[in-house]
Image 1 (cartoon, rainbow, N blue to C red):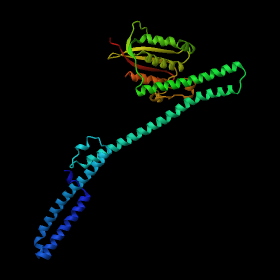
Image 2 (cartoon, rainbow, N blue to C red; image 1 turned 30 degrees about the vertical axis):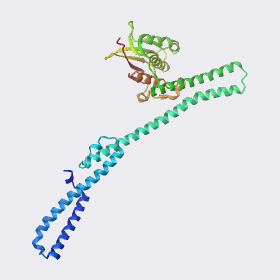
Image 3 (cartoon, rainbow, N blue to C red; image 1 turned 90 degrees about the vertical axis):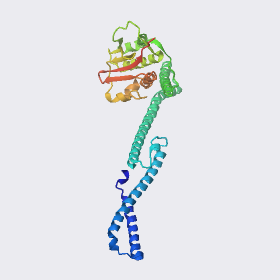
Image 4 (cartoon, one colour; image 1 turned 180 degrees about the vertical axis):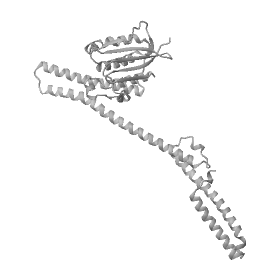
Amino acid sequence: MGYLKFKKASLISALLVTAVVIILEIGIFYFFIELPLSDYAFLFIIEFFAIFLLTYLLLSLSFERFLVSRVRALYKSLIPTTSYTSSVGQTEDIDLLTSSLQKLNSDQNLEIELLKKEQDYRREFIGNLAHELKTPLFTVQGYVLTLLDGVTDKKMRKKYLKQASKGIDRLNYIVKDLDLITKFESGIARLDQQSFNIVATIENVFELLEIQASEKQIVLRFDKEYSAPIKVYADEERIQQVLTNLIVNSLKYGVIRGVTEVSIQFLKENKILIRIADNGEGIDEEHLPRLFERFYRVDKTRNRNQGGSGLGLAIVKHIIEAHEEKIFVESEAKVGSEFSFSLTLDQN
């Protein structure tokens, strides 16, 4: 049925060929055979339509085969590994190939858009990295140059050296955290998974951050008493790092006399959900999708004043995903935030 479709090129070519044939035949009848043309007028008309229809179909078939073969060659050059090209026959409808090429064009445009977004992300990441490194470097450089100029006061020298040391510590944090993320992304970092009591791990983090919490007048607590141990199967050191990063964040952006509360919720399929909730400053919804990006800061000035490498949440995400678990965040400005992640219970 595809060959009965109207094709202008085939129609014009068929008319020309038919006209030439009929004119030649009339000339032969008139000049060589010398037969009266009026006796054969009806025959010429029937013959004209028969030749025209046959010629049109043949030309249409030839054009279609030619176009299909050329499009197939183009299609194979664009997608040499596709299984579709092997199934295209010479009688395949050209519209199907057209729609396939349109889809290919759409896919290519989508890929180009993704590449542009990745390029923008890389550009932003490099800019952020340069800024993060520049700040502590300038700090260290400024204090060192001041000391080289000759500071005679011992107290001032000690103060400048301490400030320079803080800048170096900041650089160490950034380099170590970047190295850890790179190891996770490249698959070099290995998880030492074993059974451990997640309640005891959380209590240990509370103890480590007790002084920092008291300075901010923030209470660290469970939502209830967990008297029985809850055994999970994971890398305890990495999970403790996750808990530490999340709780430290809640302390940084918490309010005076605030609360950071940790709860453990049992889910289906041998899973639990660890929830870290606070009543701190909270985060606007527009920032939530990018919260786990490297160096992404909700408030760049305020966050840099708080210290850290700017990679804490990115590391948290990588560690949780390395365990093949999920991490979630809910937050509302001026109300508070809740970070939560899943873990697998130890069934042994």
